[in-house]
Image (cartoon, rainbow over all chains, first blue to last red; front, side, top):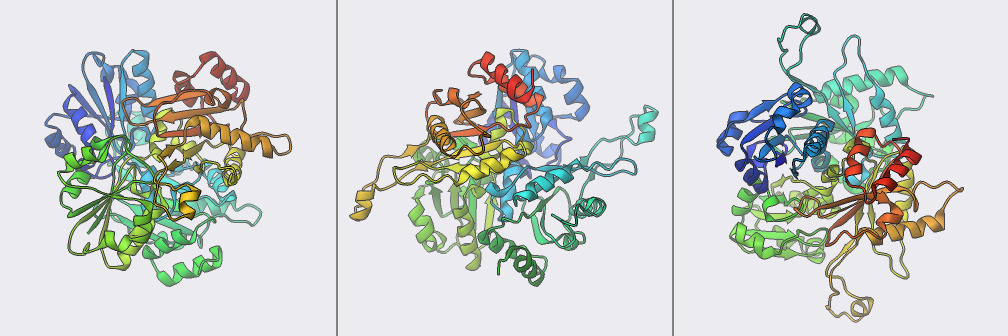
Length: 287
Length: 287
C-alpha cells in the first residue's frame, strides 16, 4: 500500500495519530521536500518515527517514481507531504502511477495553508481562486496571476497568494555546464511578493481602475500553526516594509466583500490601527 | 489558555499529536457538535483522551460562552471542532470573546473538507468561493447560493457545496410551545442537494444560458478521509440517483476550466465511464 500522508504545517507533532501509525507500518518513508517545508529538520521526524527518511526532491518524484513505488503492492510505503497531500499537482501524478500499477493508495489528510489561512479571521467561504507567485528573474517575470486576481476582484473575493520556494536549484551557469552544484534555498517573503505585485500593477494598470495597489488592504502571514506565527494586516505599502521573520510566508489580498466580523478580527492584527481603520472606512464603509 | 483544536474529518485518530497533548493538559473539554460531526461517538474520544467531554450545542456556544471561558486564564480549556477550527463563523466569535477577556487563545489546525476536497483530483487552485446548501422547507427556499455559483461559473471555477446538517432542531410546533423536544438529526445527501439545485435552476434559468443543469458535470463525495470514503463523478442527473451511504456528504460542481490531469483522475470515479467521457468531450473538449 502507498500511504500519502499530510504532515501539517509546522513541526513533527502536527502529524495525526492515524498518520503516525501508518508511518510506523512502512518499510520505506519518503519526505517530499520541494513544494513546502516543515520548520524542523528531518532528524526530529526520524526520531519520532524511529526509522530513516529518504528525502524526495522534484527530480526523484517526477523521474524516479518507479523507485518510490517499488514493491508497494506487498510492502507499505509512506510518502510524506508538508501540509495536505493534495496541495500540489505532482502528488496527483504519483497517485495515478500507483493506481496504474495496481497499488492501493490511501491518503491521510492534514491541515494546509489552504484552510489554515482562516486563522487571519477571513472566512474561507469568501476566498476565490488561489494564486502562486514565483521569484522574478531579469528575464522571466510571469504575471498570469494578475488576471486571476482581477477575476477574484470582480466579485470581491479574497485572494490567497502562495509564495515561491526554491530548494536545490542550480544556477543557469551550473545547469548549462551540467554541474550538480545547488544554490542555497530561498523562500519568498511577504515583502518580495508585494514588491513584485506592485511592479506588475504599475505596468498593467487598466482603464485607470485598480483592484489592488499601494493603498489596498492585505494580510501577510508567516509560520501559521507554529508558536511564533505572525499575522499582520495593513496596506500593501505597509506590508512592503513589515518584518515577518523566518519562512514560510503567504499573502492574502482582502476582497471588497469583507464582512464586519472579519474586519473586527483584522483590527487585532493591524500594523497600525489608525491606518487600518482609515482604509476600512474609506474602501469598505466599515467603521 | 483556550485551545481551539481541529479534530480532522473522520474518527478519533485524526487528531494531531499536538492536539492530543493539548487536550490532555485541559481541565475542561468541549466538543462543538452542530456545524459538523465525526463518524464515531464521543465515548471513543473520551477513552482516547482519558477525560470526559462536554457536548457544546449551538445554544451553549452562542449564549453561554462565558461558561466555556470560565477560569480559562488560569486553567487550560479545550474547544474541539470537527475539521479545522476556522470552518464556521461561530468559532471566530468565541475567539474574539476570549481575547476581550485577556485569555490566550491557541489554535491547532487540522484537515477540513475545504482542503481535503482535493481528494477528488480537482486542484484546489481552481476552486472559487464555497457555498452552503440548507434544507428547503415548504416556506423557506433560500437560493442566494445560486448567484455565487453563477459568479464562479463566469470564470470557470469549481464550486464546493457544503451540505446542511440539522442536529437538535425543534419542530415549529415544539418551538412555538416552548417544548424542548428535538427532532432526529438530519444530514443532507448529495441526492437532496442536487434535487434542490435543479429545482432552483429550473425556476431561474436566465437568458437561456445555463451554468449548471441536468447534464452538467459534478462530483459527489461522502465520508472523505475515512476508510469507506466515496467519490462519484457524473452528470447531475446521475448524481440525483447515486447512492453515497452514510453522512457526511458534499458536492462539487466542476468548472469549465477543468484541466486534463484533473479529468484523468475523475475517470477513476466515473459513475459510468462512457457517459463521463461523452460529457468531457462535449463540454470540455477533453478526449
